[in-house]
Amino acid sequence: MNWGDVGDAMFGGLPVYGEILALVSNAVWAGAALGIVGGLIGVFVMQRDMAFAVHGISELSFAGAAAALLIGADVVTGSIVGSIVAAGLIGWLGARARDRNSIIGVLMPFGLGLGILFLSLYDGRSGNRFSLLTGQIVSVQSEQVGGLIVISTLALVALLLIWRPLRFDSLDPQSAAARGVPTRAVSLGFMLLLGLVVAVAVHIIGALLVMALLVTPAAAAMRITSGPLALPLWAALFGVVSAVGGILLAIMGTLPVSPYITTLSFAIYLVCRVVGARRDARWTLRTRR
Image (cartoon, rainbow, N blue to C red; front, side, top):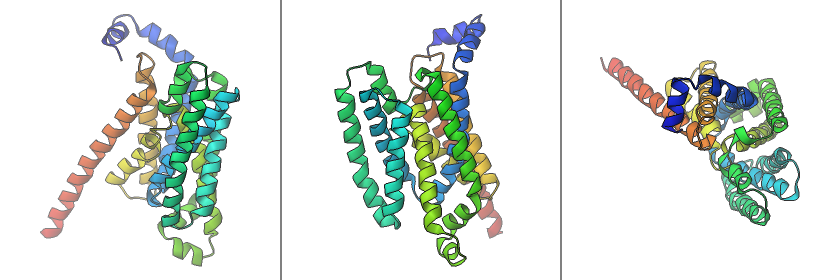
């Protein structure tokens, strides 16, 4: 953000900021929706030790979006197709953690290589190429932004519907299977939902930085609480603050949205880590007395 823009906003530039904000209001709603569902699904990503999978899915989502850009198709649809393919492969072939990490390690360079190939063949605006890697939601067409909001909402509803069996399977998969929970179906369903959310995140924060909204908020929340209700609520709140705050800061500057989002997300994590460390120190001191 330029200091001149800040000065204008403080001394007479607020109406201009309001006008710009009105033009990108859909982008703000998309960021809020992604912040909520990203924070919630991030809790299960952390509990299932699948942070690596988020990055793997994002690479094929990037490849799908780049392919759609090359052939003139809808970029959002292309990223969704790429994400679903990656999530389906990881969920189907990677039942065990070792297999899953191997598959992700194979898919990541393949997806990134395909995406770079498609972008190198694309002769349109260079800003379109750059935005797929680093995100720029304020430049996405309003129809596509509306689609991102709908996808985030559907993913949120589906996540809430499978919340209880998914939580049981994430915390104790052996007991869940013994109690009759269809763990295979739950895992595959979770992966497909994760693919949808990653596809949305690619257009807001970029393929290279999706973990700032799908991992960091949940990781921050885990530093200050472990309650079954408090944890997802804090994660969702941190996700919304990072996404919406980053967009609000970016619309008056010249930088992409992603640096603002990642900085806010990282700052929240650092604060939570300090708070958690102090809480643990006090608890240790009490137990020694």
